Image (tube, rainbow, N blue to C red; front, side, top):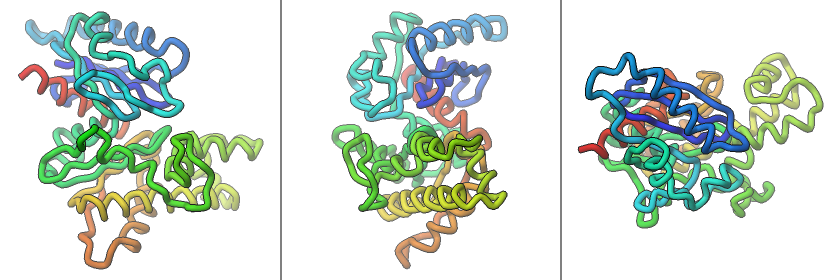
Length: 301
């Protein structure tokens, strides 16, 4: 069994898993004292599951995911703009060893989600796949011929949310112009919705308002769909996948998001490009934890 901690943008997800299969999970909101609350929630999970763990099934390793570029060897978050500033540069492997007396592995959250879905989820067995995780930000990852794409400096594949999709858009907090995340990440959509001054404050409300005929909400949904679709087109052009996995908290909306994104991609792909299959995890909120479980289990071998 593995103890897994996903430091997400709006909540911290935790779980005790058995190589991808959840045994017990919990969430705590992000905010002041993230590390302490994650430690305490994890300790509570360990205590809760102690009676149901067979002898020898105590967690042996910890998997930790963060929403940014990581230095896996050093066990550190290199940079995640405006997300979890206390984690920047912190040795999370040392933190886990001090908090739980266990070895740990650290990974970018989108990469972990892709591992989870190709190892034990919606795309089990896929050897060529890309993932777009729609949450507070937009995370991406790719696996090519069975190998997780990392690059020389651990940046490869994970910055798809910071591809430019609108040259005339505002500057993103990363410094680039017109990033998909700055247009259609949940933080950006909440920013734009806040100008309305009514009850439509989150993505779910935006979709409902658009369906009800709200022209402003429909315009935001249309722009977001184009940004999500353009991101997937670029991922397909770059990595030529067999499967596209759409995950993350926004994907709780299911086909309301997936159908227009898939239609956009099929319309805009290079003419000879393979038209990949699209899948949505049954539990997109568990994709990262599943992957962390697999990565942490591999640390033991």
